[in-house]
Length: 276
Image 1 (cartoon, rainbow, N blue to C red):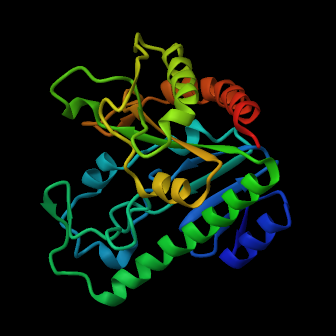
Image 2 (tube, rainbow, N blue to C red):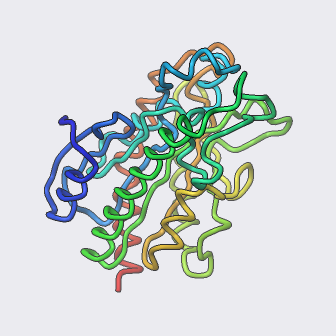
């Protein structure tokens, strides 16, 4: 992996170079092994939290980890195109608009002892801006090259905080064209439900059961590109103990192996169905 400026990353994508890089400010990673009509993203995988914010933050390191999506990059690491955030959503949230990306409160709790200065906010938001410049160029390249592409937008959620039975997998679809893409949504939901997880963990999948797919990443791509389907795919945190901060690597590994075969099959079917 090399360290590259955003400008150099964009140039490589436009030239259809293959590469693996971390942004020069270490805010995100991107890997392109081959140009294919799908991409995977793990925008909440990051846990970095820049040191100058530590003393002012009222949330603990565990509080931040609990609301992040740990291991989601590892679940999609085998795919040809992967983009992932390195920074915690507590610094800036890539799944929110620039106006709302830097939190004042987080999950009902005041985040900062003292309000952040404009300079501190600007420093964080610049990384948000850089990420979306690269996303725009990447999706533009894939859509123009293939005529259609699918983005698998991987997230996780804390299932134990719900007071009812919730699915292992949830697809959020309220902001995509369900008339056009209903078949793709259902086939993806069905495929996820067939995954066999270790330790007796069941694999159920539903649509808009816990989350509806209201994130900025999905909306940004959907509103900008006519022939790209974003599938906001949430896995319940059955792959860890969300209260003890323990990861179950055998579950993460199983998910990664299952998605390694299921995503390309689904993406190719989408391509054959929806390409111009």
